[in-house]
Length: 269
Image 1 (cartoon, rainbow, N blue to C red):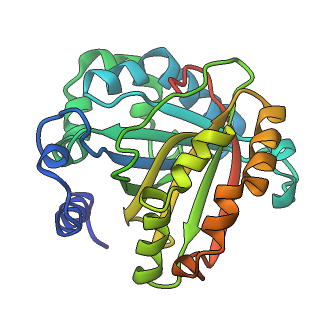
Image 2: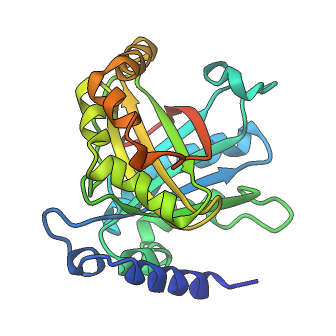
């Protein structure tokens, strides 16, 4: 199995091949395209998930911020918000959003956290668990390159009742995936989102991870009513109807994953 460092090095090569700007692969600058790591942590039970959530809220997120990763999103999925998934109970999963200013930030994050004494102390109970009793079962990661038209992660809503949709649009080949990204960036779909109340958190092209090729994005709402109103407005928007009828973008999406998420304790998004 490819080791983590080899995987990330390969990711860097892919990212560079896709044409990341100098600002995205080096120092931060206005308008630079972020690299976005979307992680899904799986836990054996609710208690272990809660312990990790409290670690992140109590010092883990602050350590990530010191390492240059911000804002950090931590979300969880609840069965009641996702009836189409037909879940018997709430999953023991945390979705963690890590925005990076450069590939160096992606590659060096774990080393920086290992050298951060405050982070290590805050996470003592979960970072050094024995093999017989791990803090989490495993985590999955998808590395995204932010769209040119939406280059940085934002936190557009702040209310206590806020919720999010994490959506993955898979395409059946690379050409169609590029056309769907074009539909957002050039065709105007992002602008329509903003107009009707689908508040983007991020929009990114997956360059490593599962379900490739795909684009992944998150939108935010103050509450459930705002989510319903936003999508209702989107479906009838004349600009969207015109864009959806454009044959340039026919058959660009083969599968859609839609997850409704709520913020975990301490989430900055």
